[in-house]
Length: 420
RNA sequence: GGAGACGUCGCAUAGUCCGGUCGAGUGCACCACCCUGCUAAGGUGGAGUCCCCGCAAGGGGACCGCGGGUUCAAAUCCCGCCGUCUCCGCCA
Image (tube, rainbow, N blue to C red; front, side):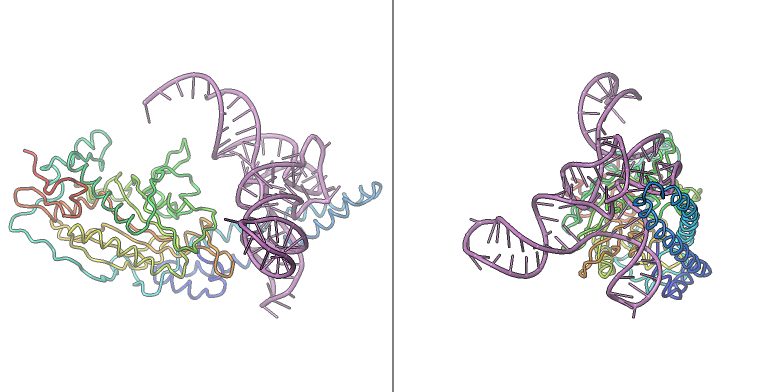
């Protein structure tokens, strides 16, 4: 939910943001109207209610013989109040619906346009070159007996897989490395629920346009989360946080579930796009004034991980039209995948400013003692998909894969050898 | 799965049987001031959240887990839901 004050006082700012996203500008005018209607309805109801409250007191105090007449009068008033109340709540609902359809205001500097209009901020690490024909991650995974897609499909269907042997160990090692970095940066580790209630899912903004991406268990009215961001954002729902000692920072580990509806035929080979994977996700609750600095901090942590793993990557500033509903700015780290000759997204970090917090009612106390919504930010610290870039980048002609040095203590291996 | 108890302003509680004087008392914690003087006590006062109107001062409304209902009027009566706890059963 965007800031209603912003909508009321500077609608042009909201319109400009909509324009850069390629979203509806007319929606802003609708929202402004709905806001005015809502406030008028509330004022009308509250005036009547005040009258009723005052009248109620005289009824209570009245002598017995006068009471009957007063009550009859009060009944008429009550009917009016009821109508006014219904009108007010309808106007509120209308405003919530219209204003709720406006995505977060994009930050200055975010490139306008759609998916292809991103700006590359930097490219880091030389692209690997091979004097042999490099194998793709699945070929390597099979050679190493690390990835088993066939049995994944047998047990659970397409886009499911088994990580086996060094594959399983590699994923755990990645998570462990990420967790160590998180701890060094003062993040609090959390292992989160992966089934959440509807209000939490809606509050984090995932039940909008992409609701069909989400697994739902109707018998239990629970959603399977596609990222621990959902649980991490819901963690402090309805709370007033004390941020006087600095931001609250978490690293949430969970299995993630995605239906991948609408991506049929895309990335069908290997584990690039799957229904289930592991992810270590960072999440920060900060004073809105510190949000952009926090965003840089998350990005730096992510880059530290990719550098440690010796991956070649680029940092892109996602265009406004490609931002999620809640994000005001998003940086993606994309690693070079040699056999695809392309950069593929490995991490993403979003600054949701106060948008998400406003929906979830998460506030902090400012220096002046007043409460105000916090800013929330999230970013990936490690996921299963990294295995793709890792295997392909560090492969050798014989199909073995050199383990990047920082990963070795967690994996207990320097080289992954093909299983004959 | 069965049975029961409970959910009130940061915490702990009173109020609910018998609806209005309860947005709500008390204790602790908290803040300010005063007094006194010492590893703290006493006194006075203040203090919740959200929304609407207003430049402001201020005014009004909502909130007793959540949502409905009854009523002129609901913390209080009725229904549904959510959550917590206890006992029994079952179980990976």
